[in-house]
Amino acid sequence: MGPAIVTVAALLVSGTDRPRPAPTVPGLVAAALVLWEGPSDSSAGGAKPAPPRRWGDALPLMKEEAIARGYDLPYPFGAGLIYTYIDRLIEVKDVRIGVDGAPPQSVSEYAELGSRSWVHNVNVKADVFLLPFLNLYVVIGEVWNRSTTHAHVTVPKAPPLSGSWTFDADIPTTLNGFIGGGGMTLAAGYGPYFLTADVIYAQTDLGFDDAFKAGVFSVRSGWNGTIEGHTTQLWLGGTHWSTATTARGSTDIPSVGHVQFEADQAPLHDNNANLGGSLWFGKSWQAIADYGFNFDDVHVVTLGGVFRF
Image 1 (cartoon, one colour):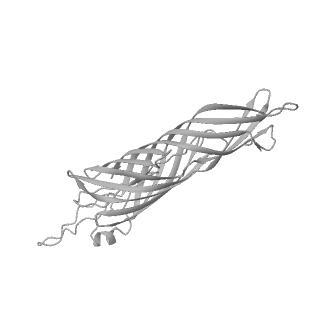
Image 2: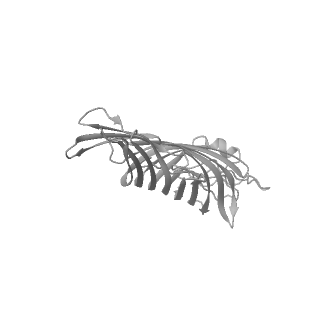
Image 3: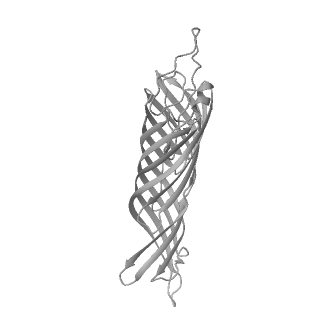
């Protein structure tokens, strides 16, 4: 968004020692995933002995139902570090300015504005499986935004002159701020294939009068299996960014007065495709990479590491 885009990486995770685990996937925000499907593991000598109990075995709720149906569940708790880079065009739909308490008036008749933003976002996330197919999570972090706004300005000449003055300008902006939010992930699977849906709501404080608020919804579908002895997931999907907002602020300008401004802004394109994968090291550690794109102006790179316990 912007001069500042609110970014959030959503992250799905899980883990198991079974040779045929169920899927995990990331999306724009942070969290963990799904039922982990394994073979029934019955043998001719009888049922497999029950594993020793862990301190976190009370979760997820209804786990007995899942285990009875042949599922092997991941550890219920997760903690991770997620980095997201975003490069995209921002559409500035209207700009309004007011001086010394006067109602802001649109100046878009005289100025055409467009912006490109480059965002770096680092989040710490914590998640828990409340149900075998439902994960809840929270994220906190920092966002660093660099934008270049191009202004094409046309100003009518005062009478008796006719015509107008026209000029172009590029305005660089740098903004940093705190970000926090939460979300949930739902998942389902059949054999080695999986489907997940993730939604996250977050807001960030970048120094304007109002905090930026964002909702991000993503869907992933893919394959879950083993490559070179490592549990692996590969996926395709899509993300919708509900990040249109109005930036409001004010400042004192010498010889002018106290100036209030408002800018309606949104991503030029609010949907993108995703492709990615994850690789497990043992039962607890997972590395994740995801790339979002739209064959035009959107480039979103998400890298993450997650520890489950």
